[in-house]
Amino acid sequence: MDMKERICVVTGASSGIGRVTALELARKGATVVLVCRNRSKGETTLAEITSATGNRSVHLICGDLSSQNEIRQVVKTFKERFGELHVLVNNAGGLMFERKTTADGLEMTFGLNHMGYFLLTNLLLGLIEKSAPSRIVNVASGMHFYARSIPDDIQNPGHYSPLTAYANSKLANVMFTYELARRLEGKEVTVNCLHPGGVRTGFYNDATGMIRAYYSLFGWTMRSPEKGAETVVYLAADQAVRGTTAKYFKDMKTARSSKASYDSEASRRLWELSERLIVIK
Image 1 (cartoon, helix red, strand yellow):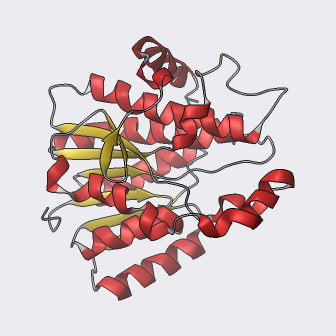
Image 2 (tube, one colour):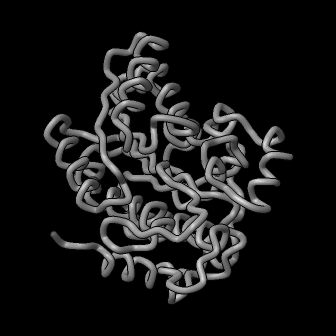
């Protein structure tokens, strides 16, 4: 697909899957906006991508997407610089090995991995619709199969489990994808999500106990960020999936997501919960 007239936003773009996605989209000639939490890492990534691709239309916006106020600042800055948005790749996320809270008082795993996607997408949605045909790509995970449903106590106040919290947030990514696709039915905006595979990223740097031991022993078997980004780039830029929406992908092919993810009533309730958790400042 010719990307030379396309404007793409990639979150979590300073490392891992996000960095490779941004690099490949830049190689295809797209205007790429890197959204990064750490300015120093973001500037280094920007320079590396520009040098590697010769693409001078690569830009940086800094913001912590666990903070709703900073998400609003990212959107404000983007709208001041650009009048269109053709591809949004929601990738920024994390695996928290102890319970933390966001600046808005939300449990960090849910606040970053789901609410970051939810609020950023909704604040940019008018521009995405105006720029149609356009695409939204949500990086989820096969870990969502380990979540039976979105629990009422999603904030995990007294019994935090890192892997359970992560699985719940990734189920939320898939359910958000399907619900958003339903709400955009009849418009030229596609919404898809994907499992990138087990990828060697910085997620496990702070791990302890059995998780740390497992990663130390078997981390070498995990995919490279380049392999993990293949399906992301495919959904963002390939002509073969033009018009495809509300699908879960694995290895550049559609796949079945978990039974829980297809519960449309639960997805509607998750949307309503997410709206209630938006902090107005």
